[in-house]
Image 1 (tube, rainbow, N blue to C red):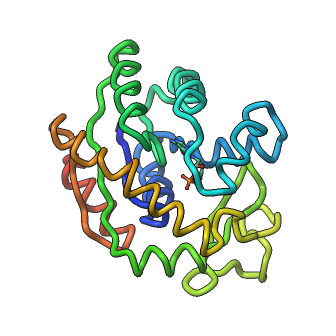
Image 2: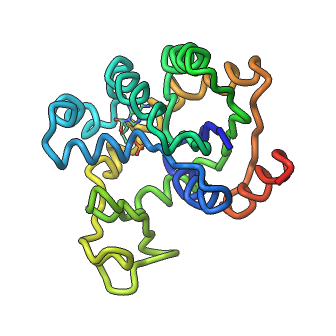
Length: 215
Ligand code: AMP
């Protein structure tokens, strides 16, 4: 399947993407994961992106499009992909449309995961992430803590609070979402690709997508 997952930070895009990859081998492409990996590895891309990310600002469109143009042409995308956290702005959506046309790829669906703001705030402040860039497993101190406190169940690396998940950075990221990313809902509605699902629980979101795609 070829999907875009839209939704505010903390709406559950990553969790839904991971559940969907298990269905048909489509790959999850998270620009946030790619950027955090680059920051940890200290690459040029990481150095350029780090400041924006710490503040909860968006990284410039040109950097993101450079990453995505390469990533979408890698062989593992042939089976399908789940775009998690991309596109984030109207110019990114327009550039993606052009890129997909050039590559001869058409999207199946754009899923808008709509979750109430209180739930988002609660989730983001209690979310913890594995610091291993190759793992980045997600935990929640209240609802799904790691078995051993502070240690990732999957890879044994440290589980930490992301630097952009302080209260200040979170409220800035949500404002950025409302200003820059929420307009994509109207963009994809016009394209006839939008499917909005109002659900807090990721399994419900996945079942809605399966129904919509006839899986
Ligand atoms: P995420 O893990 O998706 O919440 O992304 C973490 C941070 O990475 C964001 O707050 C942005 O600074 C940056 N980022 C991720 N994806 C994008 C994107 N598509 N466009 C611009 N910045 C992005």
